[in-house]
Amino acid sequence: MAISGGKDAALRRPGKESVVPADVAAIRRQIRSFLDSKTPEGLAIGNAKFGVYAFFDYDGEPIYVGQTYESLRQRISRHLTNQRTDAVAMNVLDPFEVAEIEVWPLFALAGKTTKDSVAKTALASAEYTVFEMLLQQSTFKAVLNEGDIAKVEMVVLPQSYRGRIIPDDLYVARKHPDVRIARRAATIANLARVISERDVSKGLRRTLLTQARRLEKLAGDRLKEVSGEIPVGDPEES
Image (tube, rainbow, N blue to C red; front, side, top):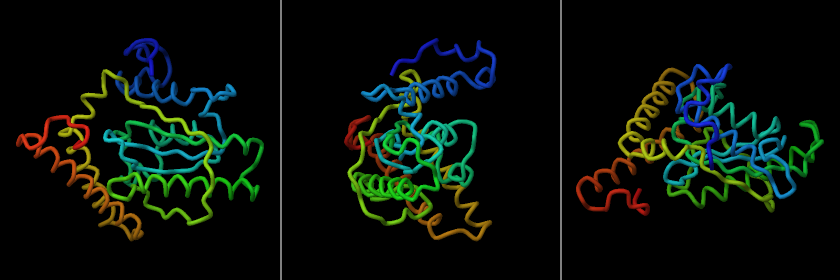
């Protein structure tokens, strides 16, 4: 996905992006570019009021699933930019780990309100269907959601759209396993601290275990790489 304006364009423009580092500004532009992508009908996918979204890490592993009734653009931006969400604040989700996004915009619900029982049921069913689908794709048969997603009737999903949100000039450095190991270990430490200081749900402890398993695999694969047991950068082993 092309990035317009160059790496430092945001730093030359007035406004909030002018005070953030160039790499952060570039990622934000990439996110906006993805959310501005059009459906065959010419609708911007990020403008769907109702929808389901999923985040994937640098190995293509699903790491988080969510739903929104405020618009995909607003919800995803809150997760990944400067507006914190519970998942980020509780150290469940590290935005640094998100390399790709997939969305399922529910344009068929346009005009509905959050009080509409049909819309609420359709949104819950779509989220559960995506959740179950991604669990089957996951190496760990788990994602990082701390809350349980209600088991409801599964449905046929609408067309999904997936894109990478990290610009090419940042992707290689951020994908490096040593960088990711350090970030993941810090996230686990922070999450463990939160758990030790509060009366937390079983789901948050489950998330801690999933993060630990993810760290173990990443560190184990890296050890095999430096030991020469697997080729460096082997996509099947990363």
